[in-house]
Image (tube, rainbow, N blue to C red; front, side, top):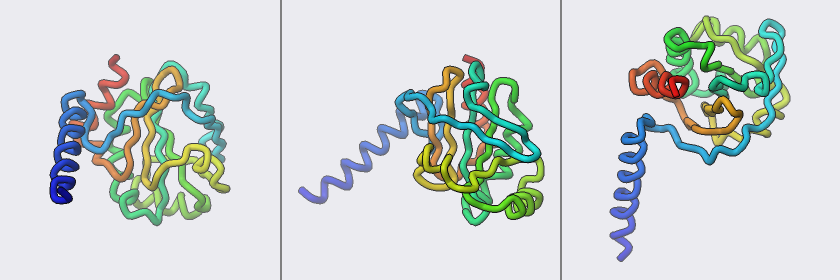
Length: 172
């Protein structure tokens, strides 16, 4: 009987993957329950103030990352390329670095993804409030301020499946 559990898990995982592909959700994105997004107010020296509440009416991608994170290093250039290919009036990309210094973030981004800018969560309070399950984590917040999707781990955001998904969000 114990040997049937792995087969059952594989079958269930396959059905979940098939359902997400059929629904137009690329691999690695989870549909969330639509609860209200946690408060998010950020201030950056060069970026000014960001308040999630002020973004009502558009989708927001809230991305948590760190320079020491291997998957983040690989993913950030794909986010930069994606950002150049989407309508940023309909989907706002908000980068949040977790607990690193301004110098660390500036030096890192200038070498990996120079067109991206990031807010800093210096004391970790925003990360604590949002509770990503690891880094990188990307939350999609809908135009009404509800959490709709979560990507855990790095994703190739500049590939067609992900670009189509993102463009499909704001085409609705």
